[in-house]
Amino acid sequence: MRDDIKEVLISEEEIQQKISELGKQLTEEYEGKFPLVVGILKGSLPFMGDLIQRIDTHIELDLMDVSSYGNDTVSSGEVKIVKDLNTSVEGRDVLILEDIIDSGLTLSYLVKLFQYRKAKSVKVVTLLDKPDGRKVDLVPDLAGFIVPDEFVVGYGLDFAERYRNLPYIGILKPEVYQS
Ligand SMILES: O=P(O)(O)OC[C@H]1O[C@H](OP(=O)(O)OP(=O)(O)O)[C@H](O)[C@@H]1O
Ligand SMILES: [Mg+2]
Image (cartoon, rainbow, N blue to C red; front, top):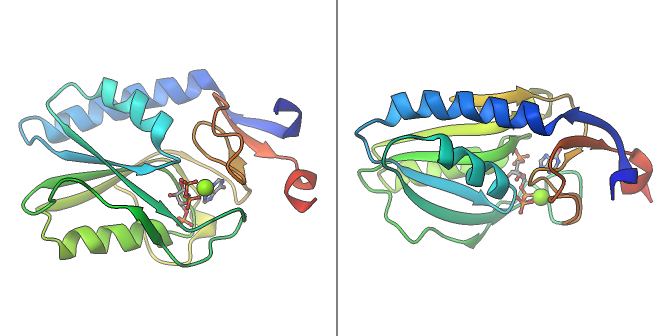
């Protein structure tokens, strides 16, 4: 698995350090608000697992499974809800957790959906932001790292469902997805 990685972009230590900082900021922001923290499956799982332990105030958790990449490195443009939330967002402060914002299509769909469902507020925190990939205007409220316009994997991010279990963020060798 590790032989398929061209370069480690963000190490385990850098990820954990950044998550502590994000956790502190979110603790201040959401103190006393009991936000609904929504993890977007499957990519956000490791980020969610680590980040929620750094938020030092009450939160409620829910999960939504959406998918638009299938086995490709380019978004299909169609966001499919595979599993919806169990909780109503009406009147709630919603915090969406993402592993990456690339084209922005997934998140712009979700932000609009939660606004339509009458959330009190909708904010987005992403571990990675790839601004050069944008197809729609979307700026996260908080972002851990800016990444270049290359297909990255690890720490939740997959290529064709593989590499999610790497503890760091890496760039895949092009021959892996071109073959
Ligand atoms: O900004 P975008 O271009 O929409 O890309 C970002 C989304 O794409 C990936 O999900 P994917 O659809 O691959 O599902 P997964 O998390 O199950 O891998 C990633 O986890 C984000 O949710
Ligand atoms: Mg994916």
